[in-house]
Length: 357
Image (cartoon, rainbow, N blue to C red):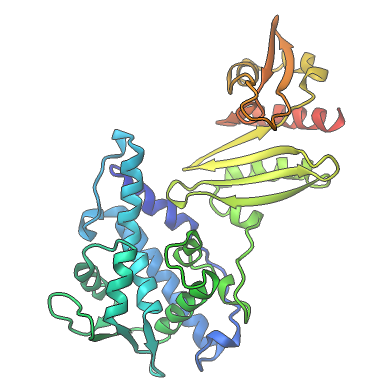
């Protein structure tokens, strides 16, 4: 287990970086050929992966916040995430506050850099700029700190196309967020999502099953594939990214006819769980009675009883099992984790029974 929260955060961002071919629109080429741009984009993606990996290994070398994961304080986790984001946010600002020369040199407006670094809470700016030099950036001398009214130049020595890719990704993100640098859509930059660059008018990239499956282990992908096939024909699914720092993803399957949610796949950290909305469970509760104790315990004991917590509540999932009546809340019931092959087979049965009910 990682010792510090920031190591967990860095690993979560690293596993989510998208390694897909870049189909860039001519608008973002800045006179490069598509092949040259792809070369620079791939090098930028490699560099970001290396930074994330190194922060995960030796966070002290980057002056990261070192809060021990064993303390289990959510504020420490959030602060560690903010500390980690200083590095990708600095790269974002180098692209967003600069002009690009034809030779691949970025000329950064130090006043804009300082103002936006303050907004993004990038502390230790001179140290982080110097740290980038260890990764192949040639950054002009700025004294002890960059100063308003001055500029600094940035070039990537080994691949002059990288700075073009960096500038284009920053510009595309600014277009998407209408200039708001404190936006949850910054995730698309942190993950080097090439879909930002595909259209003349920037649109938000679509999250699909590939996005969701990208963060799963091979065993987890096999599990998801089986459950997906069962419900795919009668449902539509939507993928949602929550907090990257926790590797928080969900995929919701909604019945096309009833418009009710049938299943949710949930990922947090490295854990996959499956939530089934078994609204007709009372019709096949005898089958559940014959299932292993682990499944029965999840059905009866996990989650909570419905208390009609809001005026729109439709009521719980009502059933009786082992002589006890239950009325389980829609929100917290029927969540199954740590799935074995046997568990998966039983979830398949429950899904099929619910679909037939």
